[in-house]
Amino acid sequence: QVQLVESGGGLVQAGGSLRLSCVVSGPTFSTLAMAWFRQAPGQERELVAAINRSGNITNYVNAVRGRFTISRDNAKTTLYLQMNSLKREDTAVYYCAADASGRFPTVVSEYDYWGQGTQVTVSS
Image (cartoon, rainbow, N blue to C red; front, side):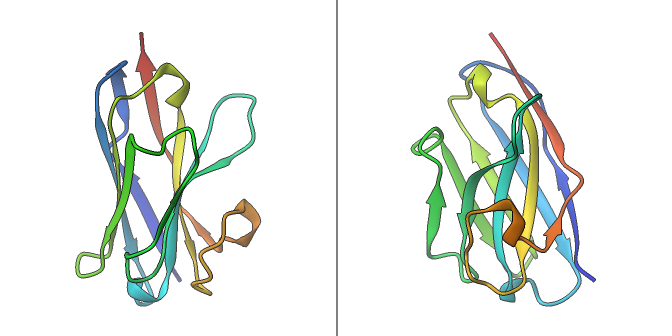
C-alpha cells in the first residue's frame, strides 16, 4: 500500500515562498508518476504540477508556471513543490498524488493514491 504524507504548508505573506514536501512509502517510488493538486474553498480540486517517473518531464498549470517548481528525489522517495512569488489566489489545501501506471495524467480521477493535504494560506 502506498502512503503519502505532505508537510511544509503554512501562512505566508504575498510575494513570499514555501516549500512543500511529500514523503512516499510503499512500492518503489521511482515507478510512480507524481503530482501536486490544490483545492480552494468552494472550488474543484485542480492540478498544479505533475512530474514523470524519472523527473525529467514536468507539467504546470498556467497560473503557476514560472513561479512554482515540482521536483522529486527518488533516493529519498520524496516529492517537492517550491512555491515562489506567492499570491492570495494560491491559498488552498495542497495534496500530493501518485499514479501507479506512470502515465503522467492531468485529471484527479486517474490518480491512485492521495495524501491528507497541507494548508497554504497567503495573506496580502
